Image (cartoon, rainbow, N blue to C red; front, side, top):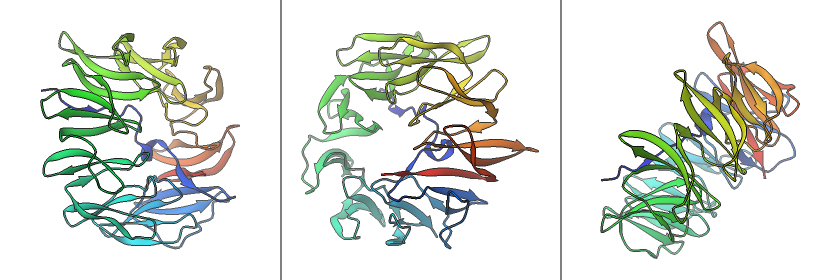
Length: 347
């Protein structure tokens, strides 16, 4: 049976600097030192007294928090509007968040009112008014009313912001959009889907027992093939990797799958709002624009993604990685003081 694997070539949003959502005139950043998470402003001043074991990426101006084995939420003024009380929780989406009470899942609104009771075995995010839940070992698409709007499925796993891999009751594998509509049947050679962008599917497959990557359209036409790795498309750009001389080399491509920059990068980050992080042969990281021009020189031990003009960057200090923030000009905004730091997106 086809093994469903969500390939996250995107580096972890926490570890690679994705963005939170926040509505304010000042810039704010989430910091982590010694496992304690807090929030600072762009003057490097901590603006909340509390610390958490985790402050997660969020959306809709709400930050998910974790403390003492429970999940809750901060509002866009960093008030603890929903104290950590849930066994698990998803981020807010379409004004609802999935929460776990004991072993069951339901949904709350931003006022912490129970909108759908905790009766599901699992619950996902609502996207455009539709979500996926698990009920009695079967998966269904549901509306906000809780009404099931799909046939039962053996499996249904979100692989990108707008697509799911599903297995129906007959064992057929398929890619579905966020509303549960059929996009394309997946052949037995497909073992994972990397991303779905403008009717293009980036996927992993097997060729003579070897794992390879390709891009196909919704009609099954092959647009790019026989690559050793690939990232999702973000803002009409993606990277693909090819191994030669024992090392992976990455090329930048556009949404036409044509090469913009040849295979000269040793690593790359695609999940960025503006400039793209790339690594050179000496192991240092810098940033290029979407046309492949080097904008910020190769200076850093590690970098994260740009978000609203700011990106996390790191240097090695005697074997200890310390993180700070730069702007689009490459100027240091927050010095190298933290175990990790990442910007909160302005809405």
